[in-house]
Image 1 (cartoon, rainbow, N blue to C red):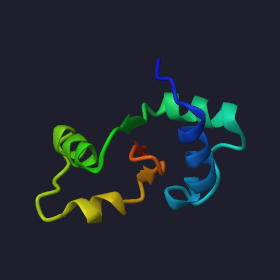
Image 2: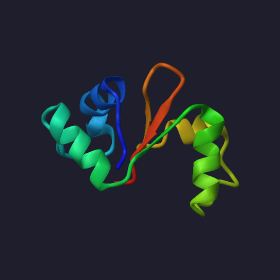
Image 3: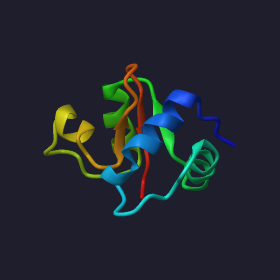
Image 4: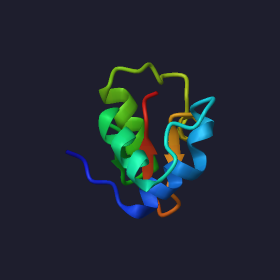
Length: 87
């Protein structure tokens, strides 16, 4: 089971519409349940975002880090970490 801290959960709640047309979570509890269900990941750096996409087999050959960080499934937590949610 993943454990997401308040910063991660609040970031997802505030920015979930960047990935989804409608809200999938209304509060901290439903945000945590959703992130656990879809096996979202928190990584410690921009480079780790790139590493994650490479490890999962997503073709990122023509993209730089800035483009990956702007992907709809990547949420900047604001403290150097990133939440990756595959919708």
